[in-house]
Image (cartoon, rainbow over all chains, first blue to last red):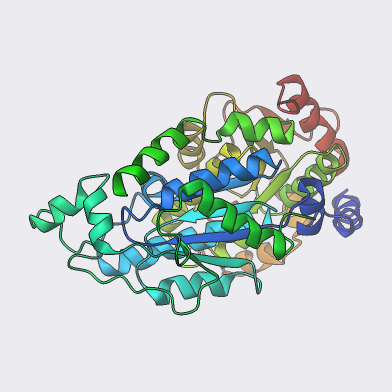
Length: 207
Length: 207
């Protein structure tokens, strides 16, 4: 019986379902849109706008949000340096699984260090890691302060806050910088269309 | 500009894409099929057969395989007790994300401790965690020994091997036990059909 079981098993594995099959089913290609930028730079708003605009085109996306993930998978991690790196590493590994599932995975995380982002890029096949830099000046992010965190950081109540007393390292060579030059007032929807044009051009919206 | 940005953002969030939308797109409901059992009990073969049979019905699945995950997300974990628990916790958290994405997530992991499996069940909405126990006697698993691990464990070259010198706690109240009573020789494909009947009956193959 054991031998029969194994034999059936081997025959079956030949026709196992892979990434290409899933992409065919979904009529899209799996990839990771990695949105990086300061707190308040509009990462979540862009992620949300992208999700909506792609859904209206019948495409399947999933958002990995830095804050939400810290309530689940990464609940054991603090904000000290090595835990920040581990936070990004795990999000990168999960994003890789989602892309392999055929999904357009949208990671929305400050991810301030270049080294950590580059390590995530290395996990993905060439081209499938699409880094989107929210290039919004600190003073604008701080004026928005949607979560009131800059205020706390300036008051010294949060230590090691990105942009205040911890560095943000902008990408040197990323796929997209938003808002595009000369269009500083672009809405999340407009920026989402820029990203979607990129995806279309690169063939990610077809199997 | 900051205010405009925020306002656009808020309006947009209202119509954000949720689990129900993704399920509608996929014409299925997200859930976790948690396949537990000894090494050699046929977890991977069942996972593979399920993936194939569901794909032929146009359904999107994704396999989280204990061994594969240890090469990526869980590469930092050893086999000592607390790391085993953390291994299962993380797989449970990732499976939850996949189910939330609308996918039928198939976790194929020995997961020997009842407490760890139950903790994963608690992460999911009622009904969405479907525990499948591969009820195959140790002597059959050991006779198969597809990876040669039982031999190493018996020779004392692997310590703490489930079934040999570490316990396997069978589920007390799981959704499915396979192979079904009186059908000990069921092939992976036949067992997959049993699981699919369960999914159909519970409405997981419709949006």
